[in-house]
Image (tube, rainbow, N blue to C red; front, side, top):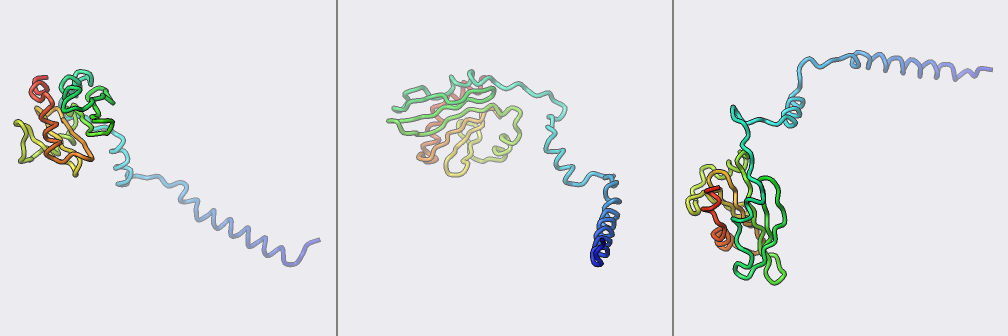
Length: 175
């Protein structure tokens, strides 16, 4: 037995679904002819950019950088190496159990972003460009290849520069 009011409602519901599907069907077959700027940005971010016309120079092994750090016991500090990988070495300095600074050397031979922050710098340290990054880091670029950095929450810029002076920068430049 049919009810009087069901038939028009079912009919209107079916017509609505058919109309909706008819509106979406042209969109389902669309193809993008040209990539959007979002597609281009996404693919650019995924693709590494090789250096122009030059093969990448291999980075120095991290262990080879350790000998250029200030010696353990310098100024009453304890030096502990915390990270070592190809092109990078890091050590923490502590005095009486408290962190003093983090020291690092990174091989920036293929890292244009690191080198760019030293471009046009007027200040120099032992003939190498030096920068202060924020209020807690001081870095020097040795031989346009090695970034030597001192990071500290407690040391001021002069004290960080004094720790840079304790690195063997001339030995590092000969590497």
